[in-house]
Image (tube, rainbow, N blue to C red; front, side, top):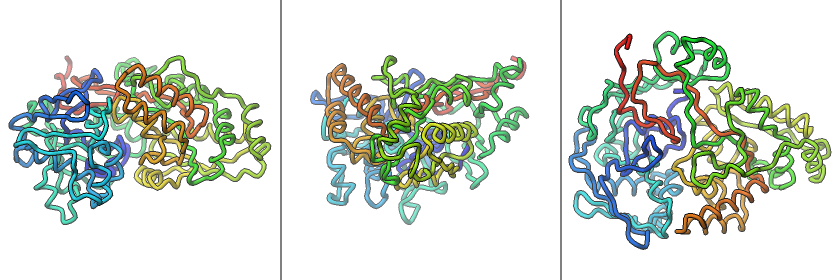
Length: 497
């Protein structure tokens, strides 16, 4: 693990590092496959009403929590309702579950119950959403819809989930958590889909990239991230090269231009100037050896609606200087230094920020002050919309353009931490979100994409590809655009085979 887990509560999680752990422990009604399709998980089947608003889920029989209790429809209702409970104050509950009928009133404390969900007997759950939305079933793959054991939650006086009362249905259960040191998971032998092939997982928390690499090379880690600093040498070594694996991801790294925290970014000319001053190809070449695709759009490759022919703002330093002068800051005169925050533990991010600082000084005459930030702190500052400028990624919560254009940039969205607001853009997203015609829906999102590219609330840089070192004896690693899936099929071949 490259960072400390930010939480052990699936209703509260916001970051991929922690989700990768929680998906081993918990499950929802549906799950992703390596083919990037939805498949049954705790629900063995479901039906959707003709109007697209009512979903009926039929649970698998004899599914158990790690504590031994049998999962019921009431547990599903409890878990989803809990994620929206104003007492819990989940930062992401409404983002992913806000379409359920009655969710806004319940989350605001105006209603005592969540109207759109109910248990029908012990094995059937009915969920009603306020409007038909083509993407909605995908939302249930996010941890806010993971099923937790009410009895275990009740063990905490405040009703929180910590490392002391995790109790899911996943293929692994949490055995121990040593703060700042490691997370240990053990195979759940009574798992409904059969016990995992490995005894468990040991995940040391290591913020130093060289330490992670050294441990892999000494045989003490089986999977580890590969940084660009080590990649060239490893690929040149005939013994190590077969261990280098490349995994495409549905994720986009970008620069957020915080209009709320840095009022000068409210000026479209200023935002456009920074976009024209950004040499994305140079970042791809010098930081990643050309192994990252330049991001023209927020939406990454592989997600429905992605357009290979789409082009955003190109690199044009002269145009950048012209726009900044029009905004009233010729050659950067009078423009205050801009703090740029970015995540610790990633040397590639450091190199990218260093390049960006040079670009903005040379092309705009603007000073950018780097602020390497601990991961949990960075997320908190983003949630509070206090970041003037920041380098971060958005990784798909589900494979649909709504998760990018609406979730990130629509006015009032809980994830619009930048503070961007445009009623025309909002109208495009609102219409696309509910359109039941796939072609019309994607066309509307493409219009939203063109507007976002011109308005520049954020600057897409490159699409993520995970480069990892993987033990050659390891087999059965399920992977898709969403990342590594739970390790329930992982095994090791005997040495020498």
